Amino acid sequence: QVQLVESGGGLVQPGGSLRLSCAASGSIFSINAMGWYRQAPGKQREMIATITSDTSTNYADSVKGRFTGSRDNAKNTIYLQMNSLKPEDTAVYYCNADVLTTRLRRDVYWGQGTQVTVSS
Image (cartoon, rainbow, N blue to C red; front, side):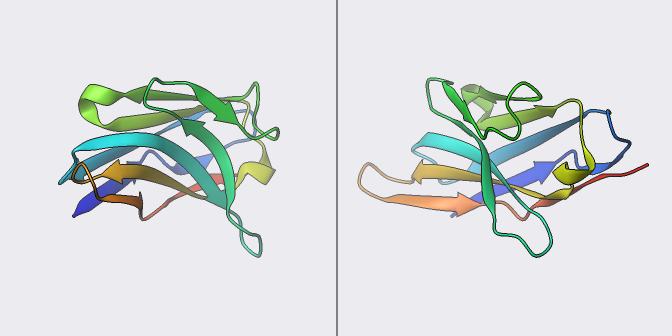
């Protein structure tokens, strides 16, 4: 079994910054891509950033230039530095990971989510 635990969410004023972390643990052989998603009330979950095993990143247009994803493979952890936050960034943020638990078994796992609220 694999667990993903997010941390770092909270309440921040518009224009402020937050840094989210997501640590994977458990029966991990290797991890392919990891990613950040968010879901606002009444909206579908959307991809924010994906980070491959060689730390290449891809971002949603809505966050380009403001959010930066990074990854520490030694710690099986990804980060999301969020700057210039806007009220429309308010959502529950989730991480996921494409994990090989054995050479032949591959599954996608999700964290429990962390709330980010941008409000004055």
